[in-house]
Image 1 (tube, rainbow, N blue to C red):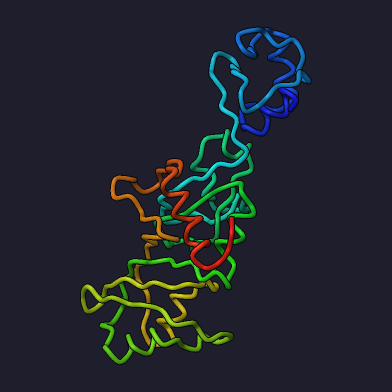
Image 2: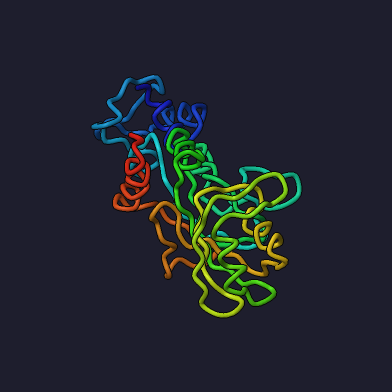
Length: 240
């Protein structure tokens, strides 16, 4: 792989920036200054240093974000801040995007990646990947209303699939769904003559929102967490 391609795919610098850094002797490959940006390197074994910092090549990255309220689940928006604004520039240069959407005022666990194939599989309706949310609603939810929601309700243009609800208080609980229609949970509660007043995603495909990850903060997925995501697909007969 060309050196400038490797560094640009890692989000370290653009190809033109790599060329300038090479001319200044700021790029080392196996301890030797690289004089040309088109130098061929083995991205899996070469020890590359850019401006004094070691570079580890990764084709894909997987991030876990505790989304704050007020952010749009997108990479750009005309008026509102977007979730990728919360990330360092290197990840934005790598083309990281949200895996699915959370409403502007919904908070909690969000996955971001540049792995389009895995993202597509996780979001495909046929794969039924589970997502859990903590919620508060305007009025107490009766047992009959809870059972009706769990069985599936008409939200206008769609009848929702069965879900699971566990109440922790008359107006609070956790709901687990395996689909993700537009404003689905809010529309489900409206169909039950109720209203969601707070919504926080707490798990996705087996990954749980870490209690020590503050709102607006992020970190990379661990290998175990990435394995959990892939297992959530393999369990349904899909190979990653």
